[in-house]
Image 1 (cartoon, rainbow, N blue to C red):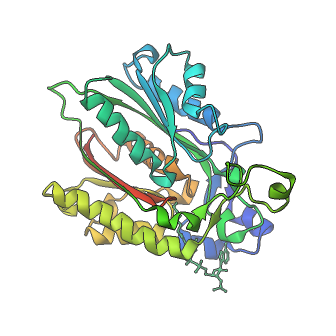
Image 2: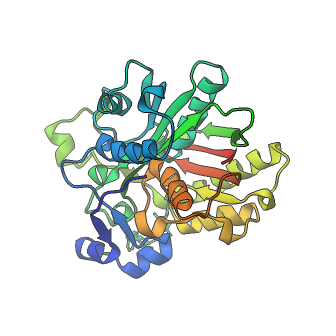
Length: 318
Ligand code: UT7
């Protein structure tokens, strides 16, 4: 994982919009978030996470045969951030592409990588979740600007040897496009291309109907968790860890309650980084591994919900 050095605290936000540390803490669980410097783009912070990842594994850059980047704040509309990262890594021609699945992006990306490995096409996939949400945030809108942060996480998904116990046991994905306008960025695409007017109207920043999203997220994350557990004959009690998308502590608590999971088994770092969309899960997982909480052999559940709507889960043994 990699996050920018610059910290934006609730106290800083109090000076920017009509909000309070107390409101943000009690409604979201957030205390601070990290924000990039002006010149930093998604691929820059992703590259830092990838360099840390490659130092921690025997797999060499030249062994990577697929790059998937989950992001809604890519360096450019095109080429993909995956291709930008491939150039930075100086990797020979391999498939590389981005996917846009909101905060569920990392779960979608791992699921795609799993298919490529299972069907024998590749051995080692580099999967990245990265967001620079500070650059698509309306810093005058207290409903959204207190929620988001920047950061990246990267993972290598590799074909396991028969002797290894690590395994992606199951993945579950879903989406429902009819709710797309509850969380979206109006301009910058072919619907409303950039213009003087679109900039004046601040249409290049995200819009969110927080309370409707909240209710949908509680339901969908609970469903994504129970669906994958039930179809594998498991209950929450069988899990060692839940690593949920970090959008709101109350959503995380509701998800854990739904599967009757002890709060001690839930990885939470929302207080430090806020909501970094597709990067929250890899950041939370990486930190928990670094801290020695999640260990090899543990049974882990990833669970997320995001723009689209999209939602999904991954059950795996680390
Ligand atoms: O990442 C995936 C997608 N995102 C999410 O999953 C986020 C889901 N939504 C949420 O986490 C919550 O809905 C929020 C944290 C965004 C908002 O919490 P809420 O309990 O749903 O509050 P609300 O939107 O119903 O607003 C309650 C009040 C409103 O005032 P009135 O109308 O009751 O007078 C808001 O204007 O809180 C007000 N408010 C604020 N007050 C102080 C909204 N934002 C702020 C703020 N500071 N930053």
